[in-house]
Image (cartoon, rainbow, N blue to C red; front, side):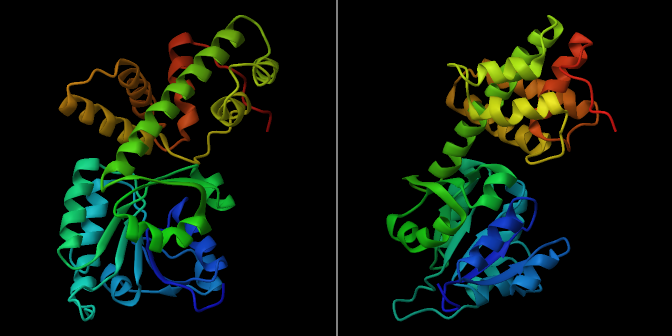
Length: 311
């Protein structure tokens, strides 16, 4: 695709957002960006236009993507002073009275709040998609993210080429809010798998087996998983620099538990994983990768899965 690609706004340029934005530029789309923090130099070098605020992004782009940490951040970006909504209001409406732009929130936030945000954006004559992702920094860089989408079919079809520039497994799950519900379900599965891998490797190590070789053996059996492959290696190698921070996974599990309370459900193992992450946070590890959940188990056992590598 050439520079005649879609005019895309991108707000939120963190560990995952930056490579997503870069992949959109590589696919030939015209990018307008804004961020509270400093714009990564690689985006400016790649040709992104830096805007002063979210309202300017919304005025200049046809599809506006948000990728920020939590529900309050999305609300502020969309409806705060100089937010996306202000830019939509100032945009020119078509003959049908609609502005016709699409707002795509790719953050991981509350499904209930998402439905409210969608209604407010719809009232401004624009479509709304909730499209949270899974795959972390690695998936973002490789353009292999899993993207779970909620919203109308027509808006999904319009934005699909952008999703295809950032991910591979792209599914329209249902209406607004269903994408976020799917992401919460994803985070439950991921957290419980991290806990299972951590317990298994801790057990093996405490029993005197080499955890690296145990992991290698398990990768050939029914216990094999992406979590055992990637995060199991992190636990053995002691590489907890963040791809996805504990504090962000805590937020997602809190969404799950809050939703479960509203639905009258019991999620006991989700609650257990949330408590283990809380223990990590209490010990100053909220900024580590979520694979460091194993540290809470190690502290209780007074034993580490593996020693830190020699400097």
